[in-house]
Amino acid sequence: MHNKLKLPLFLFGCPRSGTTYLQSLLTAHPEIISLPETKFFHYLLPDNEPKRRILGMASRRLRPKLETLFKNEINRPDLLKYLPKNTLFIRQYTRRFLKIMNLLAEEEGKSIWLEKTPEHIRHIDYIEKNVPIAKFIHIQRNGIDVVASLYEVSNKYPKFWYGGFDIDHCIDRWIEAVNITSQHLHKDNHILVKYEKLVDDTPTILKELCKFIGIEFDNKMLEDYQETAKSLVRKQSGRVVSQGAVNTRLQKFYQVFDQSQQEYILSRFTEVGQEQN
Image (cartoon, rainbow, N blue to C red):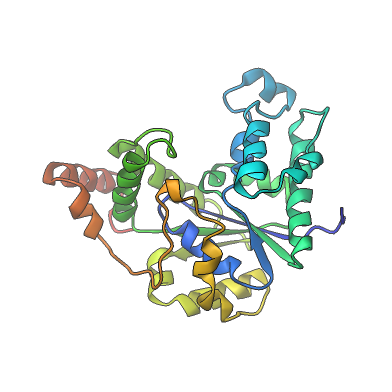
């Protein structure tokens, strides 16, 4: 395995904020490779396993998740040989994961790999400490639109989303993501993309992102992203990357919720001063 680490990019935001759409656009660039959501850091850290956390051991949930990813989702069971066999520690697993991502990029002749898992926004501090050369892309979408979309899709596909979410959970997820993002935007290795601006002027936003990443803009990003999305999107998740994404601000909100639910959601956003985001 080559020792030189490719440039790692991490993309995240609240689910249903356009993370998959932006991932598809970026991965259509000739220098970038990506995978379906690995959820690596989400499953790596034993937040609900106190003894393992104290000992610096990886969560028991991690290896089964990686086996599913490599065997079933990307059809690369050979990558399992690079996972630690006799060690259970977090840092060893992290180093192996980075090597695997680096190997995949090298195989395809890419200089950059992109990891997109919305939940990884909760693990920025750990990622920055262990992947110091990484760059981070945050995407935000109007909160009311996100809540409507997340509520609808999680209840339509509860198996993939680990049960349908209630309204408060959807609101809290969005607020959490916005608050975490705001804590990191002063850093040079973080950038914020507004979903609505991305949809309204995709070329301009992509050129700004390419400058941030350190690569030249390529028209393939606009031409090939739908084809790229096919290898990144799980159909059972309810994710769709369609041609010519449009800004449907508030439409779904009025379709999904009745009047009392709409009033409650608006009051929640007003309470936290986020109603205009």
